[in-house]
Image 1 (cartoon, one colour):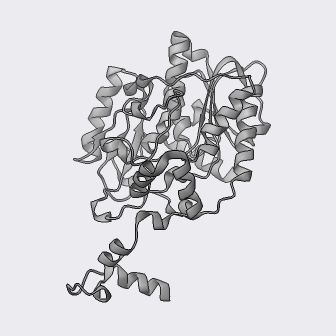
Image 2: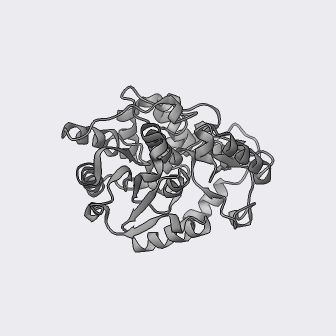
Image 3: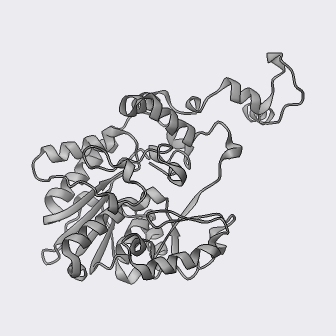
Length: 349
């Protein structure tokens, strides 16, 4: 109660103007005496500085913990059943997408990779076409792994997509699974270890009318194997991680402890199992995290490549519209909050 009382007083506007430091109150005191970095665990700051340098670390911190919250516009990104098709250049899907926008807020924005950034407020369940299952809430950067996998498979197999089997590993709450279903693949399997999270996955797929188009398997990914007569042509491995890229929406992740040992072991086990035991020869695997720590992401991919069983394909600019500047020298995609231009500055990592 004492701490809450102190912060309530600090958040009040200035009662008087004075050059005397002891007379500073509220937001001005916080602005002058703190910085966005103060809200982030020291070990995490050090890791970002090592991975990305001071300039990018400052941009990340300001995006996640803005010094002036009055300038921040809350974002809610929506993926629709037409988003992937629109990103692939299908005119009919683009027309449908644009027709939705006026009903999702006068100031809604169509993002380059097909998301709608809605300007509506209030309960999303009351928004246009929610009950009809036309769209779902999904951060724009979170759409990229499924978009890359779908585009790569569609380019490789072209007219054969209806015979392809695609797997979404660690699939709840189902945004990426829904994208893969909407891509039109012949078979989509969603693997989820958590019984509780799998219930949410099924609920979401049911609202979208996609439940019958997907097999949901409740099992730890490292213990799952496909049937011999159902080879896997593509797999999305969105591994459990520190979620440090989501700090703008989940500030608690920025103050967690530094022990990543268990997560790193799980990531390595899942990635290796998917690449060596699940994926068919010549298949495509996308490894993804919502972490902005290299140890969980780039380093894990490098470790997998060094085993000699897989090689990486460079992500093409037209596979990630609007996020071209996030493709690094390896051809891998690295989205850092606060570092891209315009609307995409505000995304998860």
